[in-house]
Each structure stands twice: as structure tokens, then as C-alpha cells.
Image 1 (cartoon, rainbow, N blue to C red):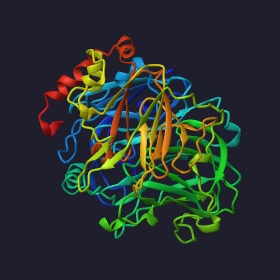
Image 2 (cartoon, rainbow, N blue to C red):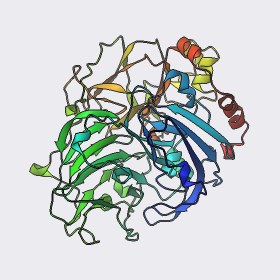
Image 3 (tube, one colour):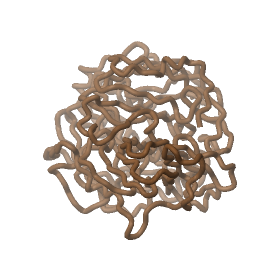
Length: 524
């Protein structure tokens, strides 16, 4: 569903392929929409859910101006934008977008411009979303694709454009302030009403909203970029009668791996190559999801979460095959995350520092704890404290759960095995990590592990390593944003002295916190 309510010129969103500086303007507005047929007020970029596609080429600089025009008091009125998976170097860390870590939110009727150089030759599949509380649940999320003209896997596909991007996500009929109040009162994480595929979905008893259609031509190979924009749900992607060859994971090119089913946690991305090699017809793209007890929300029917792969020449109708949850039993060839390998092997350096993170929920409460601490956003952002001279963990509130680390070290983070019924997708901002032990396997791989920025923790345990050669305060948190809001977060603050030397924020950034702090509570 695309409900355009903004008068912003389409030219502002048409990004020149070879431009070095890409000006993008997003009006953050409340808009009425019905992604699954239920009409509600949303928080959007330029009036659409998902938000406008942002595209760039490797090496470009994004200059993203947001104009906060939010006026619906059933949702947060301030806002902040995060560019998920994009590397952010130390000098630009103040524009990373994490509320109360690297910045303060943008107040209503105010504007702010984020300048994000695309560094280290990074390319791949990313996305942007609100990083204020659980605001992106209300709709502020969209795709961000960085193309590589020299993609070493380009010979595997023929088409890779705006029509080959798949955004799946969970959707709620209620707005976030009452949903969050219910969570705080009961300790029960809200269960979504539906799932959406490129902005459309269905729910039990709702109208038959037309499924999104992906058009293909027989004999052509397509690179589909899949983004799970959920705040909770795990989506399982498959296509009837077709295999999928994974060639990218969270921005990292991979050795091609052919599967027929992919589980994707909130925040994760994959690129797949699909060859349109079947008879001309319509085929189901299955995108069922799980996320909490569905009996807590009778609107939910994960089988209705899907799209249609339509060959040129096929009739404009639903596939004749029954709706299913995808391959099962002996026919299932599912992705095992531990089997992913980078296209170019990058051995994980030996660890200099070891950190163990134990995740525990407080029974009956909306409170998650990391090493017995539940994260609470500070009044003064972490980066401000660092720039003002913070030198050790004692200079931060205990509830900021800030790990002070030296620069230019390798940090190993161990998540012990867990019996949680939900895998917590932990996400590192501004950087990525070597996933040397996936929770999908007992294998420890230090020779050629995949590098990604979101990985599930719990189950059999997870081990990651990351470098602090890019100093700054980097959020490291669960991408189930209800858990994040309930305290399942830390800050990895590396190289405090180096950060002070390299970071010189703009006057516009300096003005954000005084403006936000002066707001009454209902405008924050």
C-alpha cells in the first residue's frame, strides 16, 4: 500500500546513480492508511508505508533531511532516524541517529539533516527506521539499497532494481502508546494483528486486500533483496516450486548457497537469486511468521502473509495451489545460519577482551535485564557525556549499561545457551561483527565466519567478535523493539579519548537536546 500525502517533489527521491552527494528529503507525517484493510493513523515518511525507497551507489554520501510534522497524540510526536546496517565512522557518529546514545530526538515542527558518508566500500541491502522508543511499529520504516557497480556476484542475476525489493514486517491495528501501556501493565509483549509484504497484508475477518504481485519473465534471473522490518516477528520466506540462492547477508556478499526456506529475524536482510525457470503461471511467495502466542490476538493468521510470483503471460489471478506455510518434511532445505560463508574469507582475529551477556526477563513485568541491568535511556546522550569528558564506566548511569572499551581491540561477546522461546536478534549499530558461533549450530568457526550486524542469541548460545578500531558509543540491543524498550540493550563505548578528538558535531546537532528537553511530555 502506498498512500501519498506529501507534496515533496518526486525528484528529491530520485537518486542519481553516479552522484556523490545524494540529497533526500523525508517529511515525517501522520497519514491514514490501511495496509491490511484496517484503517488507522500511522507514522510515515512522505505519507507511505513502507517509506520511500532510498538508493545509492557505493562510495556516495547520503544527506537526509527530515521535517518532523507529526501531530497525532496517540503516538510519539518527536522522532529520530537510524540507518540500519550502514557503517558510520567515528567523525560522523553524532549523525548515527540513536536517540539518547548518539543524539537527541528531533522535536515536532523541527528539521534535521543527517550526513552519512558510505564508507569502507560498503554495499548491500539495508533499511531505515525510527529509533525513538517503539515508534517504527507505527510505520516509519523503509528500504535503503546501496548498489555496487562492481558486484563480484553480478554474473548470477539479470535484474536487480526497485521492483525486486521485498519488505516483510509485522503490523498492529492499535497505536504504540496504548500498546506499550498494555505491555507495561501486564508484561505480555503485544502480538501483531497481521504481517505485511511490501506494505499489504490480511487478517482474520478482514477484507481481501489484493496480495502484492512480483512480476517475472520466464528464463530471467532475479536478485530479490529481502528485509525483515519487523519489531518482533520472525518471517519464513519460500516460493512454491522455486529454489533461492543466497548471495548476501546483512551487506556481506556470501558464497552462493541454495535453499528453499529462509528464517529471518527482525532487522535481518538477505539477497537471493531466483531463476524464473518454471511453467508460466502464478506461484505463492510464502511469508508466514511467528511472534508470541497467536491466541492473544485472534486477528492473526500467519498463513495469509504472502505475495504472488506472476510470470509474464499468466492470468491476473491468485495461484491455483493451496496456501501453505512452505516446504516441510523431506522437501525442506532450510537455511542453517552457521553454514553461511563470506564470498571473501575473513578470519576472525583473536579476542583481546571477553564479555559475557546474560539475558533475563523479570517475571510478570515489561523488564528485560542484561547482566542484571535493565537499560534506561539517559537524559543526557552517551555521546554528549563522552564529549564532555566521560572517561570510565563510573561516568555513566548504571542503567545505561555502558561497556567502556579501549580502541583498536577485538572484543568477544558470549551469549550463553538459553531456553527462551524467542530468539533475540541482537544488532550492533554503526559496525558489524564476525559471527563465530551461530545459535543454529554447536560449530565454532573462526576461519571464515559470516560478518553481519543482526544475529539471534539464545538457544545453543551465540558468540560474536567485533573490532573497536572505529571508536564511538555504539548501541548493541535486541531488535525486538518491545524488548529493547523494556531494557534489553547495552552501549559498547570504545575509544573515549579518540572519540573526543575526532568528533566535532554541528551547531544543528548541538541544538537538538535543548530543544527536546524543553518540550512538554506529550510532545516528546
